[in-house]
Length: 290
Image (cartoon, rainbow, N blue to C red; front, side, top):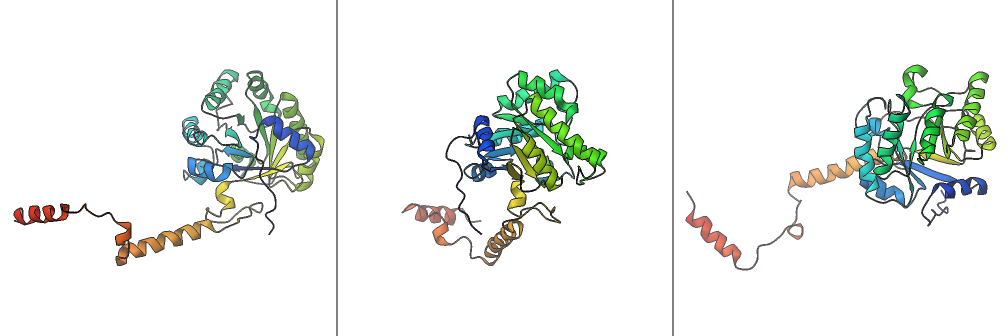
C-alpha cells in the first residue's frame, strides 16, 4: 500500500480546512483521549477529536450516554497539554447542549478555556438554535448528522441512517440548516455513500465521513480502531491497519515470561553501588544479623 501522502506542515485552522474543501484536498481526522495518543496522532492527522467515544473505547461503557462533562474535561486537558498542530475539537457529551442556550454556551466555553479550538455536537435542525448561539459567542462548531451515537435509543441501535427518501431528504435539509447556522464542518456517520456524496457536493463547508462513503471531504476513524486496539466485531467502515491488541498483548507476555524465568532485569538493566559502599553494607549486614 502506498504511503505517498504527506501531512501538512502548517498549523491547521478552520480557514485552512475550508480552503482544502475547495482545493479537494482530503482531510484526515482521528480521536485522542490522552497525551500519548495525541502525540502519536498530531504529526499525522489534520483534526484531533477528543470524542465522547472515550466512553466505549477507554472507560468500559456500552455507549456514549454515560460520558459527563467532567470526564470530557479531564481527557481534553490531557490532549491539549501536547499543544497539537492539528485542529483540536471536543465532543459535547449527552445533555451538555440540550437544556438551554446558557448551559450550552457555558459548557462549550469550558472546553475552549481548556484548549479546544472548536466543539462538536450531534443533531440537525433541532440544534440550530444552539449552533447559532455558540457561533455568536465566537465558538466554532462542527456538526454531526446521520448515525448519531447519543440518539442510539431513539434509533433502536447503531443502524445505517438515510436509507429512505424522507430520511435522506431530511439529512440534506439538516446539513444545509447547520451550514447556514454557522457550522464550519459536518461529520456524516453511517449513511449510504451516495447520500454522503450528495451532501458533500451541495455544501460549501467540509464533510468528514465515517461510514459515509469515499466522496466526503475527509475521513475520521477512532484511533484505537485504526490500530486494531479494540476487541470484537468491527463495523464495516473500519479498516484496521494493525492488530494492535494482539501485538501489545504478545509483547507484554514476553516481558512477563522474562520476569518469571529470571532473565529480566539483566545486570545492564540494573544500577550498581558506588565503589566501597558494598563493603560497608556487608559490615552492617553482619553486625545486624539475628
